[in-house]
Image 1 (cartoon, protein in one colour):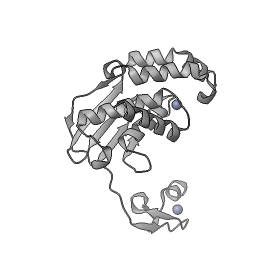
Image 2 (tube, protein in one colour):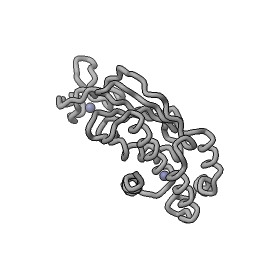
Image 3 (cartoon, helix red, strand yellow):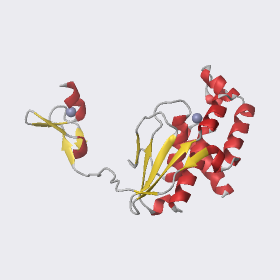
Image 4 (cartoon, helix red, strand yellow):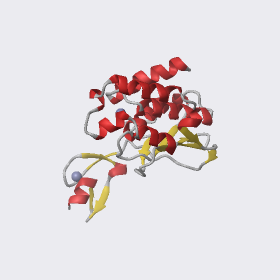
Length: 201
Ligand SMILES: [Zn+2]
Ligand SMILES: [Zn+2]
């Protein structure tokens, strides 16, 4: 378990580009969700993730940790973000029709926000420029505290959620000539057009 956690953490740091406590946090949360769903290996099943974070400091990195752990990535198209400003996500096992929601405990969020690390970050200092001696104890804390102090994991619920359909059907926008897959196509004045042209016309 510990080796897996360390491996995921290294992958998460590389994927994200810096070392901060939010990445192992997302990894811990992702692992907790997989465990609750009874999914051992994310690649063996069909998972979909609904993140609630949005563009808030520390939260983007949290979701990078979740992506690395669950295999739900924005590139793969099996994750979306509702931008609710909550450090939370729902992980859905699409085949088994089960879901679980994980939300970070507000007490822990407050502790993190009160840390020297966040103080420096809020003064505009980049994560990679913060003294590792300030960052590492926080990473250690996130790695070692029990799940119950970090997050609330919901009971497993049944769900009828259907992920967005993928397509190979390419259509050429009749306005700009760019290729657009059919789920992005719009129709106006007898023309099939892309969404950028639709919004600009
Ligand atoms: Zn970060
Ligand atoms: Zn167009």
